[in-house]
Image (cartoon, one colour):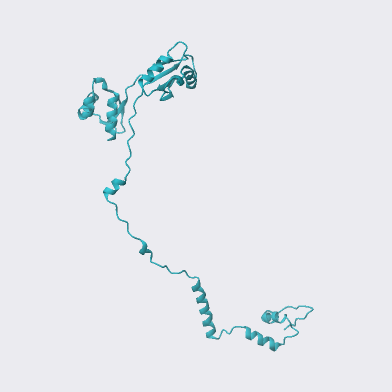
Length: 256
């Protein structure tokens, strides 16, 4: 076994590693007998069964300190079944959506620029220079561009439309106005069997719908126009031109 001094350090054999490391602390004052006695007192006695049992009890005690605390109450104790609402309650609480009103064609004018223009914006500019609504007690309900750079000006009342018609149609005006023609609305009837003649469709519609039949004043109130194809080759669709009051009834029947 090598000896360590204050001046130099020699290689330490592996079998006496713990002994030599301890002795390097103060080799001049510790004898071999004192060193062996100190090492035996500091090393645990693994042959003692009571000592091993105590160590395992300490480990088990520490593991219990990190375990989750138990639930105060069972999970199912706070869950109570909700009563099923009755049909009357559901109907009472259900919001009823109001049907949108049927659009009504308002009295309108078609405004055309007297000079050639390249856009509807130029027609609007000429329209504003020709009519000054600050001198009147009303304004148009809507002004919207239509084809050929013209404008469609709608009013809430027919008297308002006629007043503007008189104001615009004067020699110094930059635009001209005419009453918009009321085109009859069109409806389409889908899913008609091909063995049904188109000449019988008007009679079938009126005879099977008393609401429509009672409103017909003249044969022009409902007229068959043309046929369109259906996705089913055994069926076809028919298009009709109807009077405005007939069209409104058809829309109401479709919504109900």
